[in-house]
Length: 217
Image 1 (cartoon, helix red, strand yellow):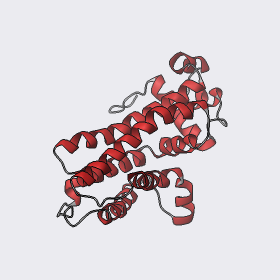
Image 2 (cartoon, helix red, strand yellow; image 1 turned 120 degrees about the vertical axis):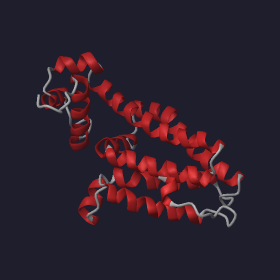
Image 3 (tube, helix red, strand yellow; image 1 turned 90 degrees about the vertical axis):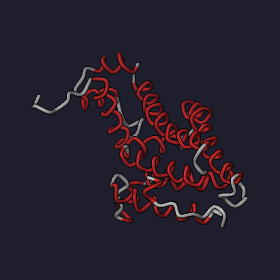
Image 4 (cartoon, rainbow, N blue to C red; image 1 turned 60 degrees about the vertical axis):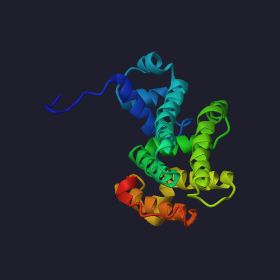
């Protein structure tokens, strides 16, 4: 190993190989042998750490959603001392940045969630219900403190969720049709500004303020 380099554990190498292959070929199009070959480990090592390909799929969901939901929970907790519109904007930026930094995993997860399966039904009953709760909480508090105009919260959550996931679910389309690259910070910065404008349209005159991007980020 060269000086300054850090070694990757077999478990991490397996996980990263699985994410890359699931991204390229899908879950069904990837075999344990494919993952072992890319990770340069024996197939038995995958069984040792993850109990097989199904365990790797569950590890992908857990790794993604626990971090994703953490950013939302942070901002819901911050509602105690920060106004809801600012918390919502900070949550949006954190989630976009996280997905950009993990764009392969993000695309795979959102693509997999769109397929009906037992694993996905379990994900919906746990992680996605939490996501719904956190996003609803941010909008609800914004209406309580009069940052946001009164309107159906469910539709706001659906709209925002679509904006947060679309670039990563459809990353190939963005690259080939629009020449945009969701994994680049420039894209996150520009796309965030557009969502920021959408949030501003939801705000009342009482809620409008001089918050700057630097305060949000």
